[in-house]
Image (cartoon, rainbow, N blue to C red):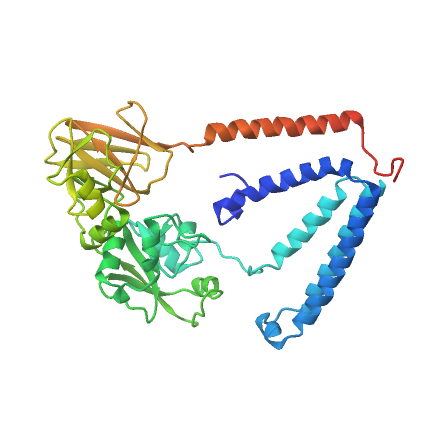
Length: 433
C-alpha cells in the first residue's frame, strides 16, 4: 500500500530505496576526507576505465551473434546515450567539487539516467489496458464465484483482477510447500495424479488455457478470443492471433479453511511429501516431528528413536485436553476471523503459507503462534466444545528491533544534516584544493 513500493516485483528489492539513501549519506560524509590529489586521481582512473570499457564494448558488439540477439535495437543510440551520460556525470562531479554547483547535481544527473534506463528496459510502452474490462477472459474470471488459485498461462495477471495466481512469477523460488505448484503451469491433461492431488490440496480451482492445451479432467466454463491477452502475453510466448482461450474449473479443490478431526506425525519432510502425495483426505492433518502442538501427547508402539531414525509408520497425535471431536464445521470466514462450531478437539487448517510471525487468538484470548501443518500451511488446534472465534494476525518477528534501528539511524542522519547546515556549506576549493 506504500506509494512506489509496489513497483518492485521481488520483496527483497525494497531495500534498494534504503541502499540509495545510505549510499548518499555515506558518500556525503566521506567527501570531507578525500584530498584533492586523491580526488583527481580517482577522476583520471574513472575516465581511463570508462573509455576503455566503451571501446571494448564497441568491439564486442561487432560480433554478428551479439547483434542478432539485440533484434531491432539501435546500437549507436545505446552507445551514444551511455557516452553522453558518462560525460555529464563527470562534469557534474567536477563542478560540484570545484564549488560551481551544489551537491544536488550528481544525484540529479543519476536520477535522469536511471529514468532513461527504466524506460528503455524490457517493458512494452505505448499501449495500456484497463483490466479486467479490456480483457473478456479476465472479466469473466473476475465474475466467477468461488475462485481460489488460478492455474494456466496468465502468469501474474490474475492479481490485477483480485485473484491469486497458483504459481506467480516472483523472481525467486517460492518457499515450501508452494514450489510444488509449479505444475500449475502445465495443462491438467498432461499431469500425473500426484500433481493434481497437490493442486487440489492447495486450492487450485480454475485455470486459463490456450487452444491446443489438454484440459481433460476439468469442466470447461467458456471459450473466448481475447486480443488483450494476446498482446500482454506475447512477450513471453508467441500467441497466434485470434487464439481461443478456455476458462476451466478444477474438481474437488480444498476450501480456503477446513476442519480436520485427526492429527498424525511423520519424521521428516521427505516422509511427509511421500505421504501426502499418496493421500488426499481433508479430514487429517500431518505434522513433522517437533512441529506439532506442544501440549499433545504421542501414542505409538515404537520408540521415538526408531520413529525418527527409521521414518516408520506415522503416529497418531492426541491433544491431552478434551475428547476428539465427532463433528466440526467452519461457519464464517472473512480472511481474518473464522467462526467454528465443534463438539471436541479438532484442527482448523487455513490454506495460507506458514511463516514465523503469524499468530492467532481464540475467543479474544492470548496470542499464540500458528502451527505448521501439511508441510507449510497454517493450523490452529481447538479444544473443548461449542463455538470458537479464531482471529489471525501477523507481526514480523524482527519488527521491534528493526523499528529501533530505523529510528536510531534516522535520528543520526538528521543530526548529520543539521550539523552540516549549522556549519555552513563545505567548499572543496578550500586551501589545498
